Length: 359
Image (cartoon, rainbow, N blue to C red; front, top):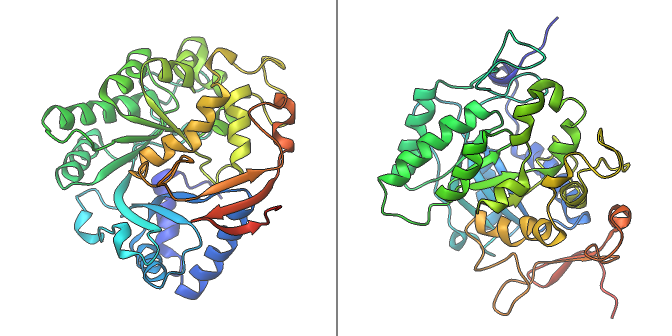
């Protein structure tokens, strides 16, 4: 008996039978059904393997993608693997719904399993500082190589050590580059030093955060990190005030797929039942987002993070009519009523794909 953590999970994945396209189609249809029902119009798929990329490309060419997909290619390798990926522009899709110009690298593990890589030992396990999925040298080389070859780099970083290593590499490539619009991303950006929170904004690195991670972790996060490190954890307000672009998502299926869960967590720092370790005012409420910031995070900022702000993310003349219609106005109802909202209709390219419009 035992538990396979992080890199060790690959031992199981490598032994599993590969999915067929028929299995992929069944899984994809179920995912799309759930996504449209909660108002999602675009999914950022954070680690898409080559067989899945080929499946999505075939669907796109045939015009069979019900929503937009922004893929981040991934291959489990310590050396540059970009040549194994097709670079897919929306022009190759019959309806412009598929894009692959990004890759995903994993820096460390998760906080819950003591796997996020920290600069100092865990407060509740002083025998460990967590896990780097690859060495700092490999991580740096992958970032440099992918940047040099024109890819948007998205790196999973939870702990402050992983975030520092990746920000060091990002700063290195940005200093040597004349390309001013590469939109480097850190996925999660959960625990950072106060200096690195400022550096995110200074470098223009996108913080791709999942607000429900804070409310899922708040029962043990301070025990793991201690009273000082927690000041740089889930620090959305600090990121925003230092000029960082903060895009928000869910990280489903790790968390729930409904974006309203993330919106509620972002503006309240409360669990769905209205509780937190700090009471009904929220967990470290000074780090809350405003409702406007939370809405931008899941719409226009998410579109910017995927180079699609010229096409989606806002309701404006000339943009695609990707629209989610809710049963109530989440910008004005009481905070405890936000999660009572349901999706009345989801539109993509102006066509109703879920629910119905009342005329």
